[in-house]
Amino acid sequence: MSRACRCLSQLGARRVFAYATHGDFAEDAFDRLSDPSSRIENLVVTNTIPRYQAVFPKDHPLRKRLVVLSVAPMIAHHICEISLMP
Image (cartoon, rainbow, N blue to C red; front, side):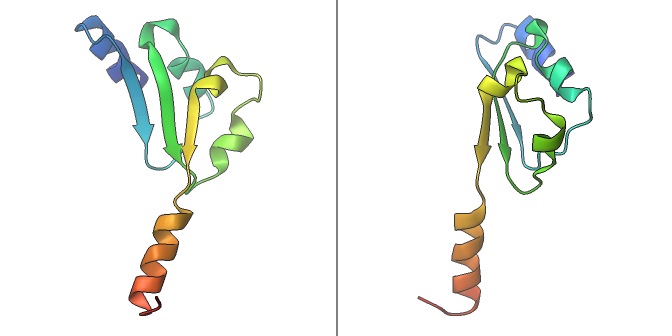
């Protein structure tokens, strides 16, 4: 992901956003993603895997650009739909 973001910047992208369905990052991923050459404005993940909280230091510079989307409303909707609940 960090390499793709750098490539986008080198190819002229003015803004770069990174999205991950599951926030299951390697331990050094946050350092690589926060590298200035990646130019990531926001890192958006879902809360399907809460592991990122354990390996992502609270004072990390990328933390300010992290957006966590909850999947709970979508799951609740589909549970109700499948079980024919209003």
